[in-house]
Length: 259
Image (cartoon, one colour):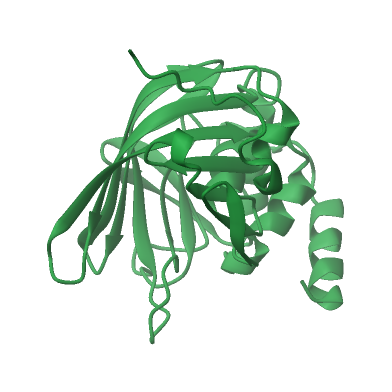
């Protein structure tokens, strides 16, 4: 992040009240929404999460590839073992980086983070200014917010001022549960840098927080990746080294296949 952007974000957070002065009304801006989210769950949200994921990916020719991923999250780190964990293939995401692992070795490191991390976990566990900094690359206008119904629930839309704006990067937050149920922003490279539409569905209460057990990523209205979760567990004890890409095979994996 450039120094000028970092200073501007720092001033924005420093001048913003940490609690929303109108908790029952419309939040004054996106920062107030993030503050409500943090205040609701900061003392209860689970610290770690493991789950099995059925992943359906749509290829450009329209055919589908189905695979099983084994995932573990701790704070702002997400480890994904793609296929049999014993094979050592997968990826480690942080809010600003991606490490690709093959055969237990890091083969590529990219300065390209995962927006899920600050939106579905980090916002509840870390200071507000950290979340704002992690969201900055996605260019969400935190000064803008409006209220609408989404699938029968009152929803705060951060990053836009009305339903007429479908092009701006935006985050949709369920007003009652204070969890993200949709976000619209560029996730995949495209010549026109168009947004993708991510739906976080089938939310269930787990470990003092919530978990979307189905996620659909749509590009031009067509699902390009659908994720369905099972066997989730919260607050699993995992060593810090389990979330270090260079130590991919050092620790026993949480998943134990049935003999």
